[in-house]
Amino acid sequence: MRNLNQDNITQAVIASFAGTTDPRLKEIMTKLVQHLHAFAREVRLTEEEWFKGIEFLTGCGRITDDKRQEFILLSDVLGLSMLTVAMNNDRPAGCTEATVFGPFHVAGAPRYELGADIANGAKGTPCLVRGTVRGIDGEPVPGAELDVWQSDEDGLYDVQHEGLAEAQARGVLTADGEGRFHFRSIVAVPYAIPHDGPVGAMLDATGRHPWRPAHLHFMVTAPGYETLITHVFRNESDYLDSDAVFGVRQSLVCDWVRQPDGSYLLDYDFVLKPSSASAA
Ligand SMILES: [Fe+2]
Image (cartoon, rainbow, N blue to C red; front, side, top):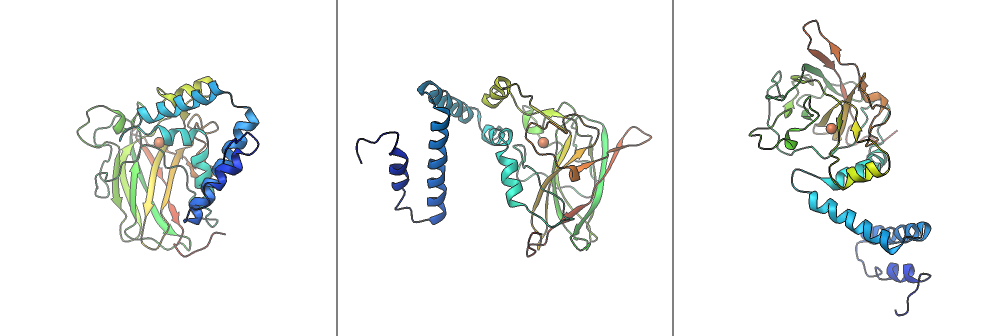
């Protein structure tokens, strides 16, 4: 393997993976090289542009830590996250649709009793959230676990605030024996994804905005059902038609109803897909 040129280097790199024992890894590496090289050829990538790309990825790595995940943001704004979700969550009609996980979930969030206020001091307009978790045949899912997270009224998640002693506006709840849940929190507002890093610079350079429509994140799990990772979006929110991460599904948009005392009520039921059921 010497004197490789632009006409034969792709096949040489692909051949270098011939000894890969894991067939799926071999397929992924082969296709990655094929498409990466095709991309470079198609845009006639210059050396300066190649180096700019390296600097961009280096910047994403430098700003990423246990609270800031620039690579998920990058995947999100390029639509790769939503494409992957859409390909892997083909559910029967009637099941709640999935959407992007996003970079702000925290494993091990505090557990709350039904009815508790998960805002835990986060700033915002009070909101009661309630609903039922059911299976596709309408059967209640008793004891379903709901992991909930959202931003405060400044558009920031607790992990974006320096020095908070406790989790705010996130928590884990367990539905009752009939699959019902209710908890207090705050009204979600539109927020800008973190745009002070390389991904923000890319959005800026391409004339894109960093905003997401108001939403509440849910991860719903129950034995015998597929895990559902989704959002509930607020109907009157801005940016429903220009979500920076392409995550809006019409079936997830819901009215958050203003109450006489100025608080809000969100009623939303989740429908899970049984683990064994095949997609329609
Ligand atoms: Fe979010």
